[in-house]
Image (cartoon, rainbow, N blue to C red; front, side):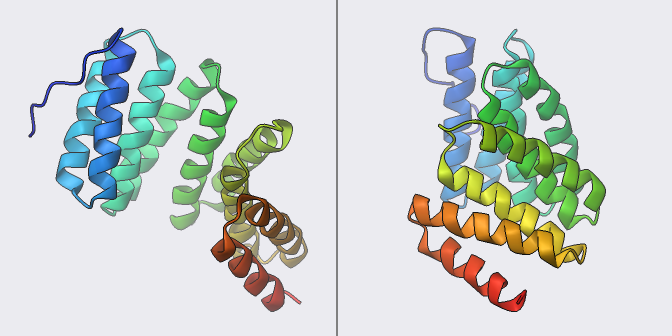
Length: 188
């Protein structure tokens, strides 16, 4: 399966997106080697194109697979390449999603100030866009709340957990509502 050609479409972006979809499917089905092959192929193909957003999505996909495999530093490098490309694109929600993922890995590595900058950028986008998916916004708020707790900022964490709880409620994700409530109880 390593050299499966991408599905044909109307152009290079379709081929990149096809490889990304295949990589995401392999990732969901716990086939990390196959997921990595597809994501690396998507990145290689996207580098030849003139579509920064397609390259950003491919880099983001490969970064997710690296992160799944415990390769945090490799994931950071890929996310760091993807974020500026997202800023060139016309979809701020992709920027927000990618910045949040970069922030998560930086937070896990103890790079709290850098993570905070990523979360601030993601939250600014989500809060400014009324069409932002509530679940994506909730996940970004949750990440920022976890960071505030790690930095011993309970008042800010409390406000963020309240916001996350409400967004998870709108999204219909009871596990997120419960997690938020649990953190709020501990922060009393």
